[in-house]
Image 1 (cartoon, chains in turn orange, cyan, red):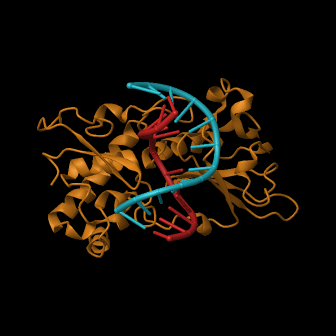
Image 2: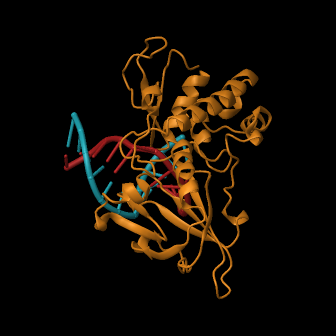
Image 3: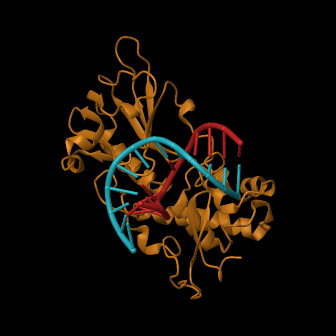
Length: 270
DNA sequence: ACCCTCCTGTCA
DNA sequence: TGACAGGAGGGT
């Protein structure tokens, strides 16, 4: 499910409602979420919530008895949801994988396919993703161009790697390349300077617009309020195989790269 | 760049 | 019944 815009949506919704609240109880229901020993969470205060790559990062304050501060990175993978109180009311108990009871309200983690993960950290620095945020200044033309210059990897799979730019997934990779006019199969090193510039600009434009839309709901995505994202109406190529391109009328093509569907317009993308 | 795995659900 | 699904990690 969620790529950068969807995770950003959830983090922005949760930050104001969770920050400052105490955790009364924490239950890790699904043993698949266990990643080594489970730290003690009850009795801590939530100090903040933000996005880190494609993960939601929750900061917990120190706890009496010498337990220092704690960070939890929630990766929603394909179908994970973090649902805040009102939305959480409609969830069947059997679907809950983890539950935080706060002094007022509750946060549930639900995940049909159970691919989501919890990772605990003792310092904030450890919790940072390897890659650079695509919306940060560090993700400019100079850096992206230098990275691409040495890469024979197809540009679409390159965009989806999380160790360079952290946050782009399967939907937005196709959409960004359409907006940039670049064929997804081209090796990174083959991009000209102006194409790199268009790629960087398209990345920012599309991710920002998607955040304004609260993300894309392709099938499963719900935000922390249980609502869907509206970026779907802006999708130009994703899931549009054989439909005419909105710009030139050429049928959209689907190819498979690294076992994932890629959509593009053979007329607009060179 | 290919293959596979994890897991569950939906659609043709 | 098989293909496929906003992800990622592993092995050739």
